[in-house]
Length: 231
Image 1 (cartoon, rainbow, N blue to C red):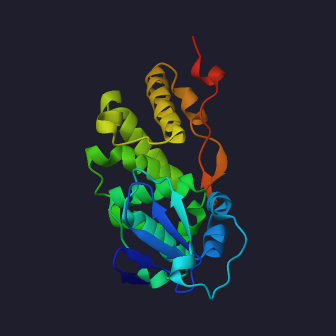
Image 2: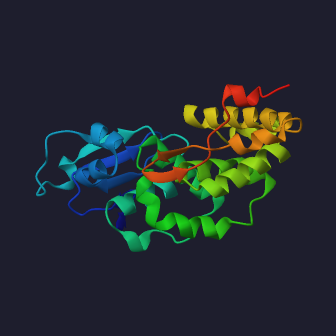
Image 3: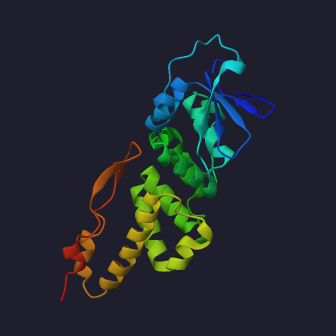
């Protein structure tokens, strides 16, 4: 990868320039690399192939709507897509992981983070502050860390109020994330009901699914019947 003025070159033979909406930076990339990485980007960059002999002035320019994501996340994503693995950081802050996982979730390519997620998570475990709990909850959800997700979900439901969960527009920038917030609120009410019916605990979180290409094993959310387990 090399940098020339405000242009970041990930592939010297790249056939397209990616420009993020609202940003002046441009990224010279290979459309095929992006297509292999993400079905969403494949659709956005689809066009007749362009010869590798073209010069910079003839590259196609693709404008991506990536509002709310920083340059670091996009750089990591493009480094992985172009096999610049040594340029991928071995540690990330909670905020960086959050931004990156939002980006990969949007472009349906979270699975490409697989070789690095263990290292990233290990670097922040045990250091999660109250203000970061909701962000970490999303990260565990998207990356498929089921045990960590259950532990953090318990902390969130017990320690955070609803106003803290969404304060300052810090979180839940997608409909899927908003659903996660709603589900957590439901779990709060459900856990309160368990003070009367502790036997229902065994039904909490007992399903498994696949998210972003990484296997996510969680126990299923309680059914309506379980939540109403009376008397």
